[in-house]
Length: 215
Image (cartoon, rainbow, N blue to C red; front, side, top):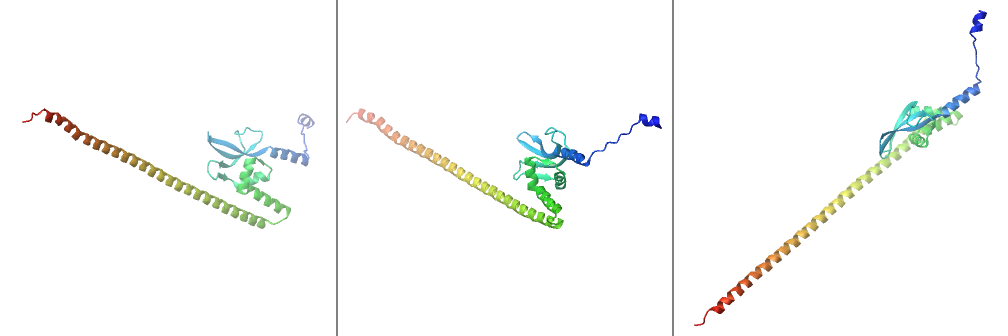
């Protein structure tokens, strides 16, 4: 037995809790919520991913939690709300653009409300009610914005159609005037030519009359 222990040392390393927490916090601080670019040149769209901040921007990631398409108006966002909130609560750091996205989608608001519950400022039911009120106001504002944009687009289309009609009318009037001027010029030329023919005939018969002897 002693020989066995001598050749197989068992070493137990005890890591203080504070040091362990410090290491955990350092790992979380290195975790970012950021955008990963995809799409073609001039038309990019992005995945919203959880990644190590030391990894290449478009390299490997830990988890995909959504997508962001800035090519639509307003931009299209597809987000896993629960996973985004989880990563925010464990300390992952969003980039500025992602923070704006999370704020727009209500993740930052819910994180703030959950902090209030933990501090005892209000209970979970109140937090949920506050969030629903915020979301309702946000959706109403967004719908108004979309309606305003749709009306502006419709008005612009009508204005463009009217402008096109006026342009076509002006073009048609110009063509008609040009044709009328051409027809008038042609008529005048024909009238002038018709007036010159009798005069020429009179001049041609005059010498013949002079050559006839008088009786």
